[in-house]
Image (cartoon, rainbow, N blue to C red):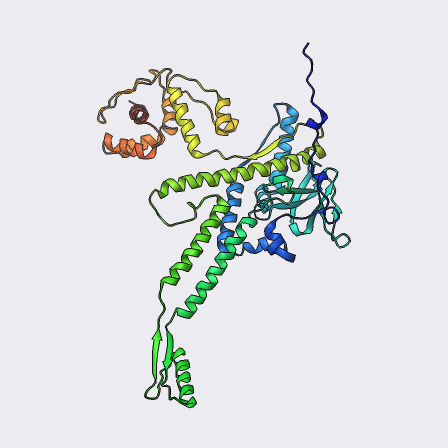
Length: 488
């Protein structure tokens, strides 16, 4: 029997844990965000709240939140046991009643500020007597602090009686979601830290831009008087300039002159470029790309937009995975602990299956089917996120590799893979099933070429050979069905 390997205690024990931090300010761990320390002052996180008054920042933050909340969410069983299925159904039922999408948007406030806190309001359901979360109320981050305790950083609520260290929070009550929790920083690393300076410079640029427009939007009037002019004559010239500013006609004594001084237009372009550049930096920070927000066209812009959209979706998926992980370790577990202690914990997640991936998968499965591969119903449920009652498998093709041949539109030829004993009911199913849109194209088409071109436009993800076979089958079924329906 092999000797069991062992490690020294100093290799398995945590040495540089949070509880070993040098205590500051009586054990309270301050927010290490350098922007808040240097620019926030007494306002603290309100500094980052002010950033959302910028229209571009608010639009992008909302876009990032919606990219997560718009995705369909699921609850997966821990295993195939009866208890696991009952636990998953209970969690699914409770999450549906508290508006899971709204809950998601609330917790994603951590993206900008570093962390978010939600307080769960538990109730006993009147129908099934289970304990469920009736609501999750989100609290301002400024109301919380972190102290260094025996188990790491402990979230505390600042109150009138404890405005510095705060009071301890009960179990099963508060959920904290942290964005980018690097170095075990409980405050997280919010995007506000990276957005502050671009927004600051943008606002300064707009201020100077408006000043420029106000000053040079209309020509500046310049009055000239001779060196021998008396104070009275100078006052007369000033009054004339003021009248000119009010769009009034003016008169001046002989020997005085009024000119209009116009500014160069180059300054406007400079301010606009500055503001647009800062908007691009903001887009890079929030979404990781600028292609889906910058409307300026350029060569290769479509490819750049596709890459940018991929980056945006990757960011949204990372946000969704991080939040679901926190909810699985808190809210989901607590629901089971209250109602079904000892049952396997289900897991909630959001689907980011891409339509393109499903299209490619369907095209692959079609080719495999044509090669003789048989698929089970469980395969389609697993691969395409379907429910058991959503569909039935219907064998519409014969086994083996499908062969294709040239066909003439005027002659209704029988496909090679159509069974000889087709009944009227079989044909009716095909007429109302997948062949229905193709048969409609056949009936409306003027020629084989016309129908084929429309098929290519409609089913651009399929190969031409596959489309020819589908068209061949549709023409044959349409012809036979017509004869049978007419009683021939």
